[in-house]
Image (tube, rainbow, N blue to C red; front, side, top):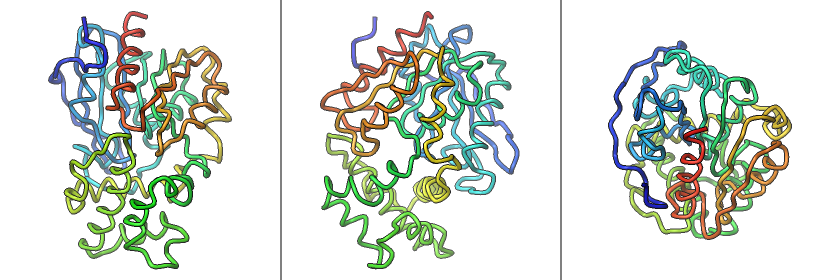
Length: 317
């Protein structure tokens, strides 16, 4: 019996592969748990972050067969940081490619933050393949959601950290931080890209949790992985995620018949609860669980407990 709020023990993949998905991209894909267990595909956040060993531990290894993959150009997928052929539509198609490669007919989806975006985009396109969904920290890419975090909103709650985020930009550049950072993250000089990546990732690291998360803040800004993360995330935002305005909420009716649990931190500054609320109201049969005293990170104690309870609930369905 698992202790409430405690991840399952560490586990190693029983299968690891390199999957060529076209467009010059090769994905790192792994499977963990019970090969005969319930199929679930884990979709990581970012976009651009990659999976971690902790993500494997969100599922009972005796009852789940967990498939995880690093999305295009991030984590252990290659080439690192490649922006060409790297869109939401490409990633939606990759879910099918991964599922087909492993012979998964119908499967559960688990996604948080950007992972929830990708899960919704996929499920609204291919609802017949999705058995259940567990989503956290809902982000649907609406203009108001992006502006809240990168223009005016979160800046009012974290004025000190916002000042750090704005510091590299000129007064004129501050009118559109995403576009301004895009130019710097695409600069031919690696030192300029590294400085921009450090500021971009620090803003997120300093606002993601109600608890102070200083580990790694400012320490990894110059790494190739950090530059790739910042470039990919900014690339998606510059292109408005290749989604129509309000598309994922508008089309949530297509999820009717797919059971879903939405776990949302009450004090999530990155993706405020209004989006989870809007999704819940538009998704017939969904269950919204708002976690008090929780921010955006999946590691918040209350959030982690709800996520584990959700995967336990669906394990034998």
